[in-house]
Length: 197
Length: 197
DNA sequence: CGGTTACTTGACTAGCTTCAAGCCTTGTGG
DNA sequence: CCACAAGGCTTGAAGCTAGTCAAGTAACCG
Image (cartoon, rainbow over all chains, first blue to last red; front, side, top):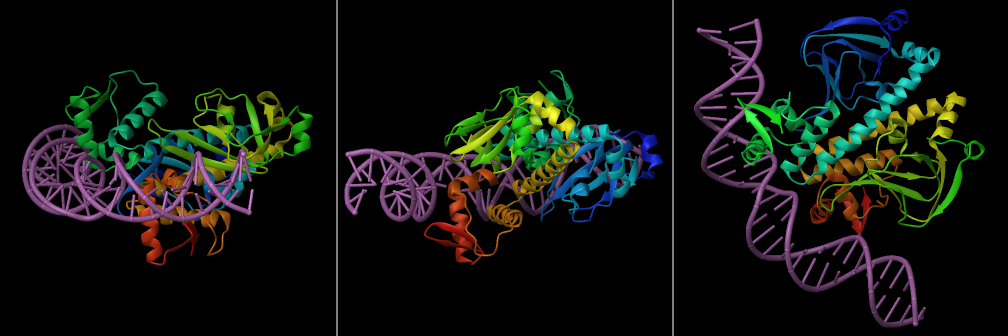
């Protein structure tokens, strides 16, 4: 969802410069603010007991994140970290609720955003239970391709590590599986870069 | 979310008796109706290429389901099937949209429901990336316990197969893991029935 | 050009999956 | 009320394979 910047400012929103790697909030914390990306990119991930981390979503210019825990008043199930230097507006919870009340179209927009996210998570879920690594990676690539409307031959802008974190696999497994898929003509790898076919 | 029955009727909602095993909609179909459970239980699941089926959610009296694809106008990513004989009210999409417009509190309620579902799915994802079967099953059981507000000693109303489908494991693995957990006093099994501790 | 991050490869192993077979429980129809 | 069918549960044995660890190479960035 996106709320107009001047509305955010009017209601007390404050923009802040965030360095790459800094966190906006962490797993387990209590939500206090509404966040919206002005420039840059924020990654939401949850980490299991071990080092493994699962990417729950990536948010760019104009997108907000972390609203569900805020609305529910429940602890964050994930951590929000800047992927690169970013500018983020944040707004206190009560001010956010006021905007929702004062601008009904905001509520509709949020509803639509939430519907998108549920739909997205429902399909993501299928990736995680696929049997073989190849199934997981194929499904992931196909999903990404469709969502971004990519053509065949497009570059996949993810590192092996990121793909691993989104499919629940390990880096080495992703590498070995992609290599095999390349040999079988299911994807293309050139200069370590990955392309869909 | 729940919309009052008399409102649903006023807007043209029709209730229907559904036999156990019947489907309200299937994966890939185009959404046309809003659905709400009056009595009984409906299961939403998506099936991957193989036999495996993934339970996306279970809905009981007073709960609605399948709204995100309806709002987005996208094909259903899952199938809705009655777990038992049920009575379901269904309402045409345009009537549903009218209710949302005429009753702002409905919109707020739906927003809250959506937030719950996103939160639920985010935490469910963590189960799927846990390393060991025991971690997955423990997390699943704890999550279920908390969501349903169960006391220690409660019966878990799922088959091994269902637990397998929700954790991404195989039936035999679930059985063997539960057996070990039983021996270690982490759960209780009596007459093949599973209880939390 | 040096440091950091990403990628790659090999060897090894724990343990999940698979396959096959048999048992228990529940519900149903005669 | 009993018998039987169907579905769920359990077990064992064997093979595979994804994960792990370790080490080295290639790309990228300042």
